Amino acid sequence: MISRILVADDEERMIRNIGVVLGDVAGTELVKVGSKSSVLDLIDCERVHLVITDLRDSRMGRLEFLKRIKSKDPELPVIIITGDDSVEIAVEAMKEGAFDYISRPFEGNSLAVAIKKAIKIRSLIIENRYLRHELESHYNFGSIISNSPKMLEVLLLAGDVSRTDSTVSIFGESGTGKELVARAIHFNSLRKSGPLITINCAALPENLLESELFGYEKGAFTGAEKSKKGRFELANGGTLFLDEISEMNPVIQAKVLRVVEERELERLGGSETIKVDVRIICASNRDLALLVKKNDFREDLFYRINVFPIQIPPLRERSEDILSLVNTFIDRYSAKMGKCPMKISKNAEKLLISNVWEGNIRELKNCIERAVILCKGNMISEEHLPLNLVKQGSSNGKFGDKGKKEGIINFEIPPEGICLEEVEKQIVLQALKKSDNNKTKAAKMLGLTRGTLRYRLEKYCSN
Image 1 (cartoon, helix red, strand yellow):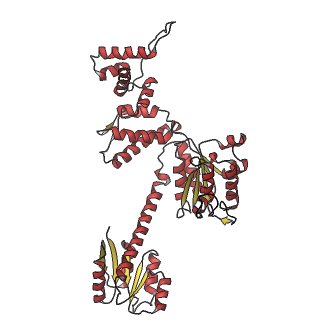
Image 2 (cartoon, one colour):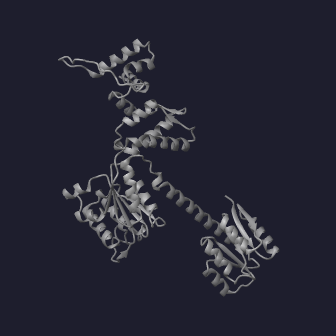
Image 3 (cartoon, one colour):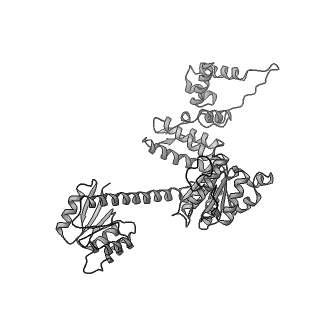
């Protein structure tokens, strides 16, 4: 990316000198600006990385131009160049937000060094703005795909609570999107400019979880060679997302209760009370009320965090969302892998809709990613789906090759019993014989997909 440098100076010679310096700074473009008012106009309508200017202007006070730039874009670096080497003027300019102050004639490579530093900082600021915009757009409520009345109710609740500082508890099975809803709440709140810090309480050992949450002082335990802030402190001014809070032990629960109630904590090994301004969002795939009854979760903490509970329905209760999610994941992964746009066959759609999805959206997403990897053309079919999913759809008797229900065969089991695998093997071999070894016709006879038939043949051949 080319860095655009606006240069506003009354002397043509000085502009040429700055141009020579920029010649040694890769990836820069010098933009000569006729007047200081033109600089202000360009800042409004174009991306600018740096302004280099003097402080002389008959129509503005000595620092008025600098103040106007900073009022338009406080993070835009400005390098002041002047023949006046007064320390007082330099201090005043720096107080008003100047990035650097360089007297002329330039000494050595002082200007080039200042330009490089300013461009680096400006590039990081622009990148951070872009990333934050991407995060906010990705985690807004509009990015959560659903036509389900149950899920739309969830989004309405989340939208209402996002405008407050209330503690939120999100419940739902694993893979339902609890963290996605938590992020959407944060990025639609007044705290969106602050940090969103997440921690999975089930993923860390008890002793490590405590130090991660509250931090520690130097020497608090073996290996604590320096002080470290915990997640509560890191989330100051923003949001802390406590995922799987049900996995905390009672000791840590008691300490978390204090932070929730008092908004203060002490690091491990420390005695100083630290105030924190943090919004707390919790999540659990377990019933906390039931855990309270079993004395497996503190009752006082439960009532403190359960201010605004949100229950996310499992995917099997919102089957109307499956195809929308499937198409979104297909588009996402095909683009990510550089493949042509893909569609999904009707039979594959029926199998996906009929599946129970114990792993919910996470399981569905993994399934589609796998299918996109395996698909060599532009149509995802049953053979690209996991074998256990295809096998389950076939064994349930829900869909044959054209979506028809399987016929029912009356069969009496003899007293001595049977070997089910051997019976299945004989039926498959008979179908192959009747179809002259045409696997597609044989699969159709048995009400199976071709992929399922291939799976069973491989199983028999390996025995």
